Every structure is written in C-alpha cells, then in structure tokens.
Image 1 (tube, helix red, strand yellow):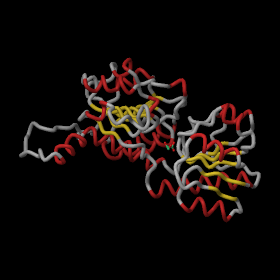
Image 2 (tube, rainbow, N blue to C red):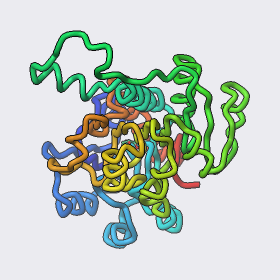
Image 3 (cartoon, rainbow, N blue to C red):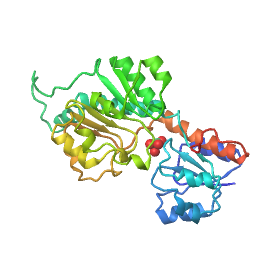
Image 4 (cartoon, helix red, strand yellow):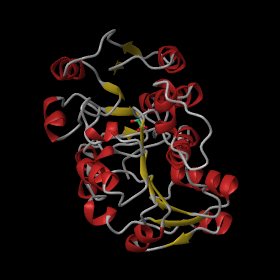
Length: 319
Ligand code: DGY
C-alpha cells in the first residue's frame, strides 16, 4: 500500500508505517495544490497534514483510487465526510492526544488577554517600561468569573477543568448534547446560546467547525456580550467574523480577544486587529507540543496500519 504524506511529521509515525510494510512518500518542500493532487492520484492512501488541501466532491472525483485518508488533525472540516461515507472511504482523525495541549493554549490566551500581555510585552520591547504606576496597565482577575464554553467536547472539557482548578470559575456551556461528565465533575451548567453569550466573562470556542456555523460569532453576538468579556477562539477561524470582532474590540463592546485561529488563515500582515493592544494572536499552535505532535503522528499511523489490515481505524471522523 502506497502512503502519501504531504508534509513531514514526527519520525515515530513514519517509522511505524514503514515497519508495518507500507511504502511512504513525503515531499521535501511545500506543495502547490496541483502537485498535491498529482501525488494523491498516484497513491492508495493519504496521511494528510494541515487543513489547506480540501477533500471535497471534486477531489474524490479526480482521485477515485484513494481508499482511505488519515488526518493529522482532530478537525475534519476540510473533508466532505458525507461524500467519503458515500464512497466508503474511512477518514481517520487524531482526537485526545492534543486535547491538553490545545486547551493549554486557550487557557494561555485567556490569561494573556486578561493581564494585557501583548500590550505589556510591546511596552518592554519598545523601551517604554516606565516607573511603577498604580493606575496603569491594569488587567482583570479571573477568580470566580464565568467561563462559557461553546462546544464542550474533549478540548472544551480540559479547558473547563483547568479554569475551574486555577480560578474556581463557574462553567456554563452550549453544546449539541449535554455533557454529564462536566455537569457532575465541574458543576457545569448547560445554557442556551443566548444565555452563553450574555453571561460569559470569558467565551471560549471548542466546537468542531461546520459550514452552517460560518461567522456565527459576528456583530449580533459581540453586541450582546459583556463589555469586560474576553473572546477566545482556538477552534477554527471560520467561527468568527474578523472585521466584526475588530469593531467590537475598538468600540470596547468587549474587553479583548485571544486568537489561535484567524479568519482568514494565515492572517493578513496588515489586518488591523494585529495593531490592537487588547488582542493576543498566535499562529494556530494549539497542538504544537512535542508530546501532542508525536501522539498525533502515532495515532495517524495506527489508523492507516489498522486500515491496511482491513481493520477499523482507531479514530474515525466518519459516523
Ligand atoms: C487540529 O488538529 O484540528 C488542529 O487544529 C490542526 O489542524
């Protein structure tokens, strides 16, 4: 079985595939769309890294030879899962192994915005670290405040757990399903979407992105949030309307925003949001730890190895 990996992943995953007798091809440079497609056409299975390449109907029409896709990600919004199901193509993904790392970044952004880290960092770098000022650069404390989680799955649960332990935050959440574990362990309260946005001091997105949720967090949402609320997005940039968020931030409709994902991605160099002192932007590094990235490599390889033995993948995005 010929495996195409579009970008180098940690060695552990490559070694596992080779030891299992699979033939692995990895290009040594970033591929254009046309190059990626041509490699897909000449392979049986894909270990797909990143979300730039789209596995839509056109892709499946052009690559009828593809038998399975193992994503090197937990998110699968770049794959037409319905079409993959119709064609009986399993699509593996990598949940769990990155939940801690990704929720760490949400927690980091929440705190960075609350304590105005970007603003203060810039002050130091620009040489304007003045003498102690009791009224300057004041952040806010998170103790006992309300954390609203949109999408309380594995990553959202980890974020809620950390926030509860560190700041005894009240957890409210909105989800497709009730999360009994979170309700029992963290006293999390299920609320409607409107209650979530109105009551959250910190609103953190952790849901799987679906096209119908495109720019769900727009001006009509930001205007209903508290003026001292912090908006955190570590899920997918498509969840928020970037310009509306900018407007909400400059007009002080909300306190600040922490983004590990942007809309579009990568963010434009001249996006005015980057100039704001109440914003902290990271370049989609949620899962960027040695531990999580090794775990993802291992799980993606395990998914393909299982497939090569006619077994079910360990984790599949297909229902
Ligand atoms: C994921 O695993 O979905 C990360 O966001 C990387 O794409």
